[in-house]
Length: 161
Length: 139
Image 1 (cartoon, one colour):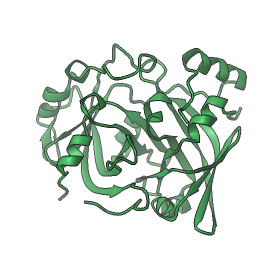
Image 2 (cartoon, each protein chain N blue to C red):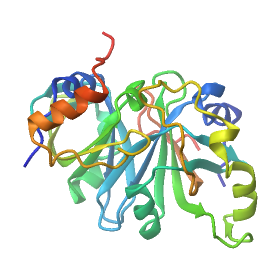
Image 3 (cartoon, helix red, strand yellow):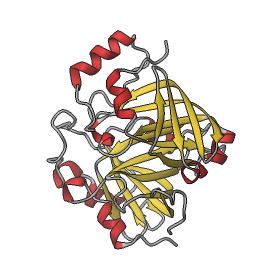
Image 4 (spheres, each protein chain N blue to C red):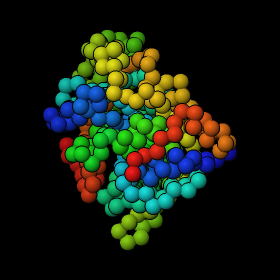
């Protein structure tokens, strides 16, 4: 079982709190890949990475047919945080039964803590020509991490966890 | 219609990219391309090291779709996702991955998220982008 390190947990918070921008990578069931940058990121327990579902379109559709997913540090790069977190993800949306379980965490605990992410961690650090001020959060993507590998220069692909 | 990259897009892509290739089981494999060999109107050639290529070698042999976005600060300043068909060729220690661009999406949070842009004419795309952004990456 994977256990995220303290450094990884520090990196997987919103940039305004000292964290990172991440890329969320998925694929449709017939193999068409998708990769999109995300700002709202956090961890829960020792093996979950969370992403807010605010503007997900293809990612959302992909996860509904194929849970295979990677979350990758996008920025900063070459900074000792060059990691890919790989596993199975689900988009826990409002309306899920509160006791719905995803590898040991419930829909209720995820939505209670992170269901109003924009107000909890407002995007103050995001440039004005990129930020969107009235996002409507529909849920939270929860990645159950099964493997971590490196994208550090010279070590890309090396297993870390 | 086909993609004709804007000059701004070409400059940002040259700063490096995160690439996603899925295998036949639909598992995404992500690598980084720190070096870009060339960017033309509708094609990007990534110059990958052996380790960068190792992550996508097998999936690319099964499925030639490649999706990518720009690394670093470009992951927020440069809100696009590119998709195309990739083909790799090794020369010495470098693997040249040529991606013929077929699809382009906006990833800016908000009303433009997911907007497909490769259906615009080059003039429309240029005007659309100029209305939102003009910044180029710092050298």
